[in-house]
Image 1 (cartoon, rainbow, N blue to C red):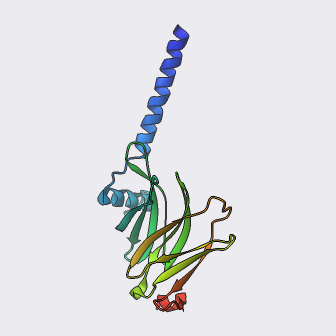
Image 2 (cartoon, rainbow, N blue to C red):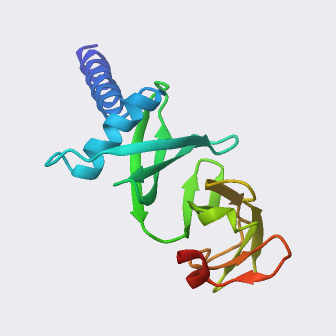
Image 3 (cartoon, rainbow, N blue to C red):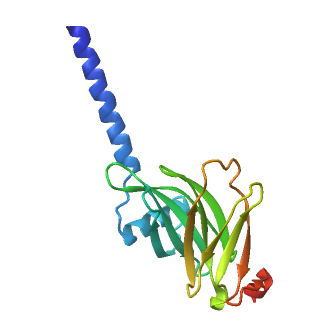
Length: 185
């Protein structure tokens, strides 16, 4: 009888420890200000105060993942991947920022892999962007017309073994290719 009691007590302590760890990891409320505060701390790694501007928070359909599009230093565009825990709160998984027009990344969700394209549309010149995988026979097109900044995603087929990297091509309203140097001027 004592053996079962010790086993039960050990199980309760382990479950309580797991729950406490989970709650401490997933502590970001689903509010822009709470996300911004935590993102600033994440980006600065606690040493200096980074100032970000949250542009949008986009939940990827039917998943536990959301993409936060943000500006840093009023120029660079970045994104952060948020995961939702069973307590309904988020934690930051990773973040990337830079000065590119657009960037392509692959994220793993509880519903499979997604190709994510984030960026800016200088002077609204870009109508569509084609993401063509370099090591797989797969591409997808996204419409960014009229959007100054964007987060777009595409569910990737499960059979893809190397869904990263991708070549991004920009198209104007007439369907002509726009060179990156034209967008940077």
